[in-house]
Image (cartoon, rainbow, N blue to C red; front, side):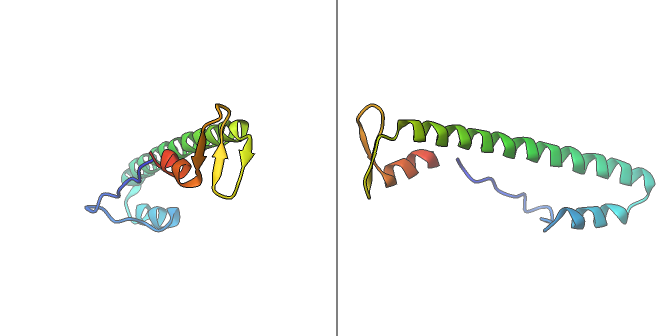
Length: 94
């Protein structure tokens, strides 16, 4: 899984409170639009993160099902193929 980058053209707030304080400095109609956009973005991020959590939970479950033998440096999966811990980390990082 690759890391995402922020867009340097815009400030990167440290909390949702900082975003809310910025929105509150605007007038009524602007506030409504800004809150709508920020909460839509929040929902998008939550959905994306939850999808990643679900995927990771599935992967971990599959790994646990496949592990038959564990030694300090090697795991043997259900097919009898041995993988080192480093190979598994590389596989997950892809």
